[in-house]
Image 1 (cartoon, rainbow, N blue to C red):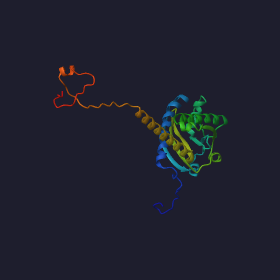
Image 2: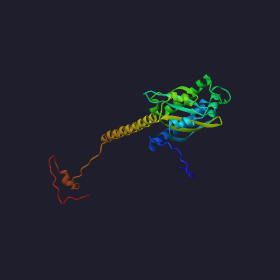
Image 3: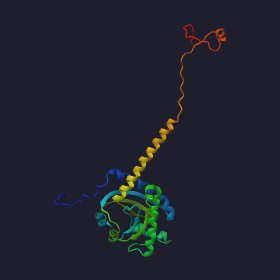
Image 4: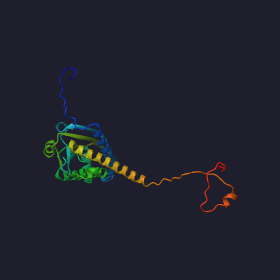
Length: 256
């Protein structure tokens, strides 16, 4: 309720399926992706590029569709293992600059739907985004993510994607001195599988390391010495000793 007494709607479904820890893990992975994109895209697009993670948030799919810009470039990505696909949202400024660089010309004004050729070029760009991420996250690479198509509006996206809650990772991007945003969208089910399997892999590696350390420890040799007595006897007495003689401990022995 506002100060004026008016009632405002609140969507309690938003942000309920993933805790802070999984979201933090996903953010760490996306920060690695942003650093990799900054390096790789500079060579790929032959221009200065810089990427950084802005926000990682959970939201309902309906809310996302309601906030979607009128001119959106949406690159759909399919994965194996019957996982719900993810998609990339590229804003018009960055999309136009990317298209210009990849087509060998000036940045394009994307105030219209993309042509068939432009969609094909953008799909290749989305595949490059996915390949860079998969190269730094083996769990994702195992599912063979592949850019399938580029759609232009929420209606086409809704026909291709069936999701309830999603995770949106927003990237601040600068390509050839053009600033804009990219967003990576993952259905919660896909995000949960990625994070859970990645964590399980970490625990498995820790178990293997502990086993190897235990085996290495059992192979270590430890020197052992038992000192029963030490002392000295006159040289003349020692010269008379023969095999089998016994020297009893005696107080007359001197200790060096």
